[in-house]
Length: 137
Image 1 (tube, helix red, strand yellow):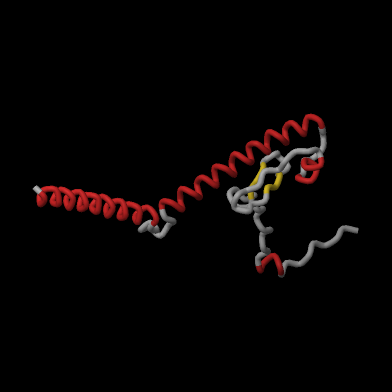
Image 2 (cartoon, one colour):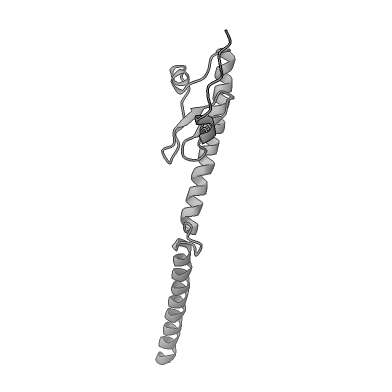
């Protein structure tokens, strides 16, 4: 009778150890970098959550700017003007800075940087050695 109870105890212990090994394996796979060289599943999920939070912050800020613009028609919104009028500017969790475009778009320096204007075209060698046009008297 005694040996039968101890065999049940060992079987239960082995079953628990197998479950723990499987859980450890699955957890290690979750935190491992992806084979394509990207972030791990965990890091990727955290990054997506931060991007979504930043998008929501910008949507909230857009709503606040629209309300502010009704009371301040013709003025260009800036962070300083909004804060002066009691509007709380949300913070990007990853340290991004929010900027306002003239068309009302709000950009985050980390998650949605403002487009940079293209550089001016460089003159060709032909243009450099052209004679300037003669002035008309």
